[in-house]
Length: 367
Ligand SMILES: Cc1ncc(C[n+]2csc(CCOP(=O)(O)OP(=O)(O)O)c2C)c(N)n1
Ligand SMILES: [Mg+2]
Image (tube, rainbow, N blue to C red; front, side):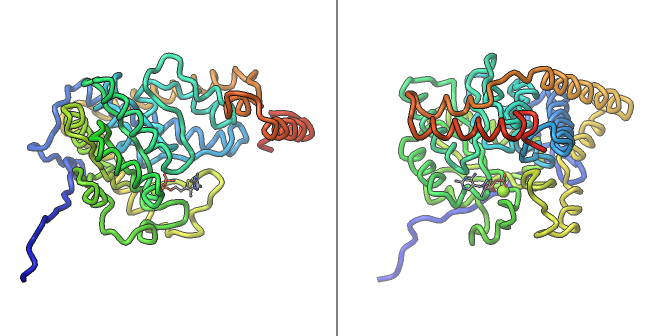
């Protein structure tokens, strides 16, 4: 008996602005002039904030963190496609998205100086803090989305971010599986930045795309130029609309690049070439969006210089607010692990506080 075809699949790629900022008008999302400028400003704030944070770390003024330079479009544009009713579930390389949601930059700096208080966003609804446990937030996202479905909220969905490395975690597959089984309103955004610390994506998976991992779970999957803010906005907007209309989850693979080190503790020159990095600088999401704004007559050289000065001043003001508050309890993380005291953990707290005192107190610990 001949074999019969049960199904066939395809994987599509979306790009709206090419590397030189040239627009495919048929795909341009519906954004006002003010929204376009606000999106660029938000990406610039993330870039300046990120670069400033690297300097602060090098000066011993904050602890280790993972820079997001080069990846601004992949999280900022989706945040612009979301409403306050949607849940933002990040990993650790979504500074642009968090800032666009309204997280003050000083919160990011407090968190990366070891203060849990940085994770508290009193004025922000539905925005989860940094999650370091690779891939685990995909499960939190599906739980939230399932809850939204059970509550009958038709105006809310969840957007969950994670890296290419997370796609090797069981959590990722469990999350996609149950999101699909339950048709939960969730948009998975994989920031494929080509590296998981020193492991290139080609050693992470044999799949030609990460988008195709959606196929096994029977959900729409699309590869998007993750350095193209317009494409990221469009893809997220479409996926959110489908999720809210009861159409279930979507997987978006955002193809991007980590232009800096994995974290400030890493030296990428040990495992990748300068030529590769330079090639990706040519695809810088900010450069591309700026060319687009220029071509539309929205931002000229003088306007850009003024915007840059304004954003730099905003970053400096956030650093001043960050440095003005140093009265946080250094052992606060121990308070939040369990609901009730735990003897093992209390022992660890004592050791931590003793070692901190021996090292000269909280201010000495990055020395
Ligand atoms: C479960 C788990 N295993 C290992 C680590 C250590 N770790 C932190 S980031 C990282 C690589 C993550 O790569 P990817 O998912 O591609 O995200 P990227 O850092 O590139 O943004 C690893 C292995 C961790 N935080 N959590
Ligand atoms: Mg990665």
